[in-house]
Length: 255
Image 1 (cartoon, rainbow, N blue to C red):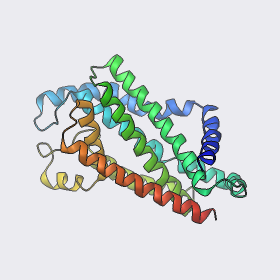
Image 2: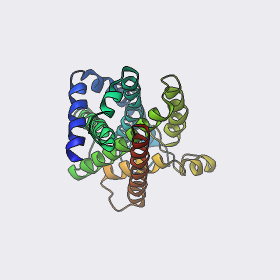
Image 3: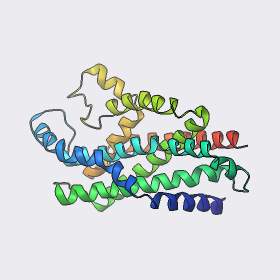
């Protein structure tokens, strides 16, 4: 099984490296937020009560890293739909490669790409802006974003295999991702001091809110908060469920 995963991972990595522009394209939106929204957030954090502890860059940077995983990993199912249409998946089905490897090789490729993008965002925030974070905080952040990518990639591939429709796929994703994005507090933290009670309570039902809070706690170096523990447990649970759904779907659809 590990050899099968490695073969699929290497194949997909070679294809990705032939067109590295997609890594930079995925960074454009977070970079624009850093340059054009970050300076505004500096003034907001200084003059508005209710913001979590930390500087504007410790609040914004980890949230943008989650945004990279949220959108970049959720749309990877498009590539699988293209392979289904061109017969690539059909040819892979007749090989002795395990069905689980067909998923995990792709998922690990997606996770590596997301981690590389996250590292580039962190380096940019360190060099250009006033970001302060310890080495341990950065490592933990990369682990969190890697698990997030594994979760969302697995779900994206499973959804693509279930619907097999390139027109319905983006419509479903946009319908699901938009409320997740707005309720996760990526742009402005949804805290009791800022949000009305009903909005705060609704946001607590969004698992990605807890992951964003965990990322921010990590960047502050606050490893003892409930936010970090809760976010980590929620993320591990989502990862297990996402991979389970992806593996079951690949086994059923590629039997």
